Image (cartoon, rainbow, N blue to C red; front, side, top):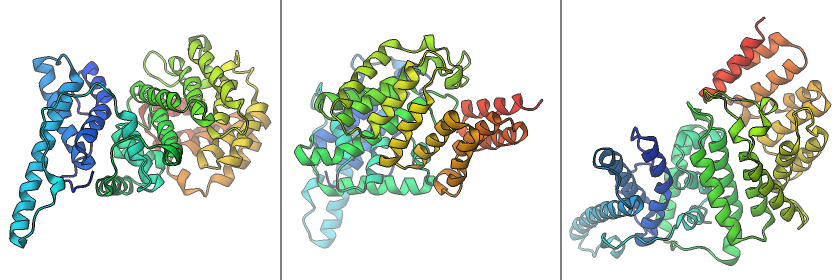
Length: 427
């Protein structure tokens, strides 16, 4: 798995001007990368090779038609490109070795590129590889979001509330560390698997949330990402059915995703939870999520994902917005704060406090978060304050906060929603 990449291209999904083909490429990209890494190693160079294959598909498929087995086609093209990259690096090392009268390292020997593609999906193995202990937790998450989730560096930076340049450096270092570590491409076992599991679950949750509420772009929802996160969570759950947090995360995803059909209107506009048509929610997902949650909670000592799933279940089981049990939701957020006092959780706790105890109580908690630099650049703190000010009848101040919040989000549906809320308070 060692080696030095001759280039530093980041994996991304090319624009093929074809929704079906683009969706397919997005779904297949991590599978193809996993297959190439499993076969050849060289994580960093494999990513470059897969990018070349994706670009080739974007160029050729619209005119020539999609191959019968798109995944095998991409793996073959990526394998050939990786072979070319390795041979080029091997030639460079031979020239340097000749000058230094040394023997070149053997790890750069180029493999054959025409081995038939295996039918197995190694995406989960790739997921655990990206969460290897050689990386810091932040780098594990960032690399997995790039390699498995297909998120851009800018999107990951927003998820971590750090500058994009900082995240780009973090991802580059993480790729190099994986390349230098020599770790084999296989599923970890025993204690090592347990050690990486917490990071894996956090990564899957970040991928899911980016799909459920995209941080940038013209669409609020990216079902490809949320669907992939659910698919991977199901695989992890099958592997570890007795783990309460694995089960809790899958339950949380299903209970949250159940509301997706009602989250947007005909033109893609955001519909807040209180105004959604609950008859459009996916009843099967709610039933499955509640059953999973019950199994997880039966083990006692609930973790953060189980608590969040319990909160989601209370929302889903309320027949109307007015019937929501905000007192119980607030109690669950207070429990969650004891095990996870992140700024996002604190913000949600303040919102629940406003709904249960009134806007003044919620705004008092928001004031304590104003100095948190992780929230300062985003829109969520301002949006929460605007909503509480509106609840309190302070229309002018609420309008100003909505407008300022709209300026701070890169999501067009979020911008339109916040500006619409402000416009409604103009009278």
